[in-house]
Image 1 (cartoon, rainbow, N blue to C red):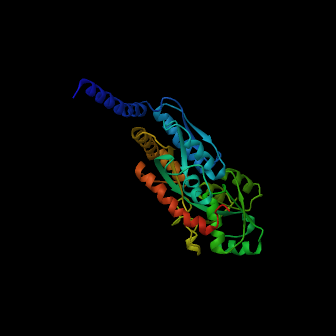
Image 2: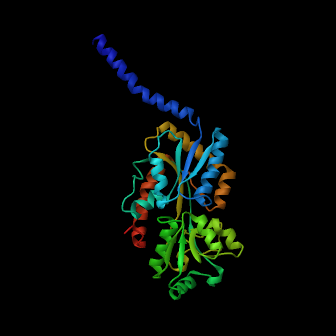
Length: 325
């Protein structure tokens, strides 16, 4: 073998090794500047609160700011599309949830990304269950009474945290299974829906139940049912839809994802940092208070979970008649 050939081979070896060196250096130095966490809902809702809670502890541990960037709209697809287009360097992440990743692919005719190919799914956080809440003035206490009321008051509307949100799918599912008619009023997140509910503008709405329990306990709202497989610890007095005759179980999952192509070392570092933050008793207790039950999951398992959830939600969305026309 000639010296020229050996030199060429050595050069190729160096070039092949360089990306691995760069990836390792990138992971080692992360974060060297502020990190943006994009949230697909406005301030005040569960996604926003979880992003700020986890971000605060990451800031304290890693010595850099984790800044929440609320980008609501288009069923969460606006936020996801923003993150998809960013560099896979760990400095733009998304507080992932059902809406843009496992509902939108079936909900809409076309979305500007592939929920698996265009993202690196880094760290799963947990899941919470939505419920049905009504104004006390309506005088209903259970699902049977609610269904009877909607059949008398055919112009009754319900609010959700937006088109394609879990609360929207739940509302349409209840309509379908109970054989009732209600007008859907989508909001840009649960916070503005709750604001209108408190003002008396909105009579009924679907939202994550745990975050609404202070209102329920204050007598400002009545919790009719929760869409969990069993009663939740934050509201043991509220029966499930199944208990009351409607076979509906829906849970909203949360995680941290980034653009496609994030190096394995960097993905592992961010995963471990998020998992460590979520496992802290102070963080875990606050998440539980908001109805989020945490579960440890590897990045690979989280990615597999997202793919499986797309298939789980597909028939629910179709059955609810919530597909874009």
